[in-house]
Image 1 (cartoon, rainbow, N blue to C red):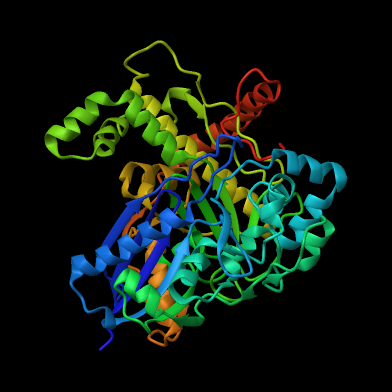
Image 2 (cartoon, rainbow, N blue to C red):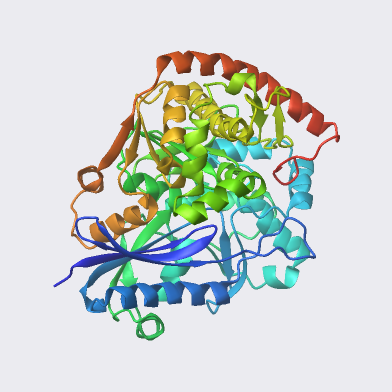
Length: 520
């Protein structure tokens, strides 16, 4: 009897194998951290080591089977998910020959070349694909052509990391639209490759594998993969999707006009629409959803989770010591103190990530400003709360961007991933947005979404939308404090002015950007 579903999740910082029962309950997770090293020859590069990383993925599968002691033959289906944008290139024999992870930024020269040779092309391609040169595959392929021609000449196929995992399990390579669309090489409307995009840039257009929609049954675990992982040969494998899209399925955000926020190292605002349209000003990204005939406006905030980690490790040694002694989470200790700081942090603001401007994406130098030399009001807890408020203000900006393009604003939003574990951050988010913020009980939303897709692909679930809404349980609803909302509305206007001024300083060369897209 088939009792289980498995998700394999290749994230930015780790790879995991997660086992669920058919009711969507997580039973076990085995995780391995990984890093994507910069090649010292190429500043901004972010290489993906497919040999070592496949070994880590295998270890996770082996680990979850060992920890649960289940019979692998009882796994009904497997699916995969991953960070978006990362690409793998294969030769004619199906061997990996080059790969880079998601925010690889080595292609400055190539972006400059594209802008010089083809002015206006980036906007033209964005209006079709929903992508810009900031994260898509076009400059990276041009980089390989220019810097590694011996690799370029051998390219037979291009794929994404979730498809790579399926390829390792089944020997079958196909790309699905939710992640494939992040390459910038697909037509949003057709959800398929557009060879003319590569041809316009003097690149080969014969490197596209087949496209299969998420939830399609693609193959079975091979004998070779079974020997390497402990899985049962013949286990069905189902086409998965990108992490944000499957995360939306995992929290029940599957239909048009629904929205989710995922708060991790990067924050993602996802808004579902039933139209494959883009922003005329090219400010916000548009991707295919993992649900057919649904698309997503996506706005990204850079590094909020990493900023929190930096602040914790750089300034909260006392709280870390207390946490070690008491067994509490250091962030819980910080939250208890920051809760006593009034909304607006006495007028103090900070600049880290900016509201998204996809076609010219650059972040000012990190800055705290407008504080006084008053240790009672302006302690490290005030600075900590300012980071929480800053990220919520960015999210407000992203919602307004999407509203300008779609005419719609969600009446409520689902908040998931690591940041949603913080009651204080969740409440601040509700106060800034002025709408209810719902936090689901399942925090591993991306893996759950992959498991639901796996079950759908083998007929366990008849309807992705209905199943997701049935299995997702809301743990808490944060209602906005409208007095605080008024404070934050006024603060947002001033913060936008502040960020523009800080970005002007960065553009003048006085300060270094926190991050800038290639060629910007």
